[in-house]
Length: 436
Image (cartoon, rainbow, N blue to C red; front, side):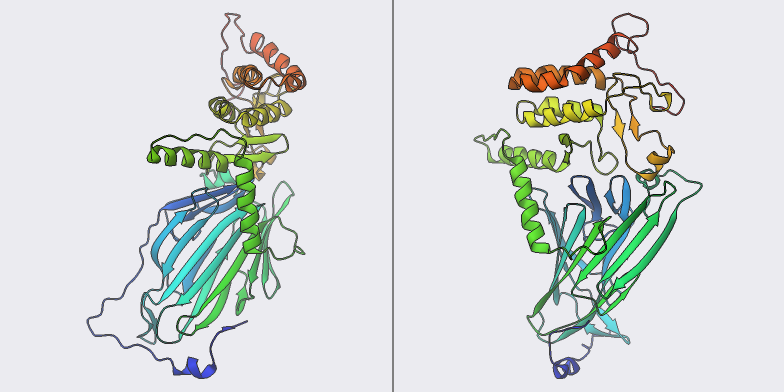
């Protein structure tokens, strides 16, 4: 499908712009800073241009539960990279906005579109296992602008530990399929026999769609604009209706603001300090994930965007006076995954509290020991400490009653296997050479 915003006569009337013999063409840089977005168990690492995998220097990708679902997503104009104007995260970390313009675009050795004629605005956000992107383009020139806008994409379904540098002797099988004129699905059957997929949906349908690219032939009259939309769903069903960008963004921001309600609000006489506090709360809210047991602060992006015992416990302790709901979620989740058996490979013993939890292929196969790993020096005593302080802060005795069996199991481990020499101090040791 062609985005034809002008008459054929207007398009044919546009001419190549001649340049002086001493003209210095404008090109873009090769290295770019990174930006991150997160919503629950999905996060994305992209560069300042809004691209994934377009420049060296970072673990780019769209990740969901320790697997990369998009390794490349790059925007180009007539096979050239746009020029960077600026980018910023919203104050609440809900979205990334990127301002770009066109470089000099050549055809047959002549400039057909001078730099700085197009304004390109990319807006990207995550919500419910889907990455949404809007590409808005406006022609600020005085003549018709015709160009190809391409979105280049690819994926490897790499496990997060592979992205970190781990080498694997074998991997699963990747496939790709064009579903129709506006949708592509990339799939991977892992060695764990689980199928993971990325569903890419374009709106409107591109002029040309291939397994790794979507090309739009765009024609814009002076001061006209248009928008393109891309949604990338992690493990989304192929018959899912095309996600809508603006309703999704509105729902996402409402959800974030709803989750922030109930926490202590702090305001001082210093405006700069107030901004620091607001940004700190926004960052904590982005790291916090809604789990079946409650809200849990993940440890960090990109390598630690998962349930970590001691990190979650320490964060909950520090936030207890601000938002005790975090402590309740942390205690509930860690109690749900408290060790009940002895497993040397996972450094598990009855009563121990989780250190780390992973959901990727390598963890499922035991190639890394972190599917549910308990090798932590202090998560178990911190669990007991947080439980006591939570009840002191809230008076929630009903929750304490429900949590009491987990507290007793933790205390038995502290006084037993956690103190093998009986000196009253908890000792740390790993059961195997593969442990931490």
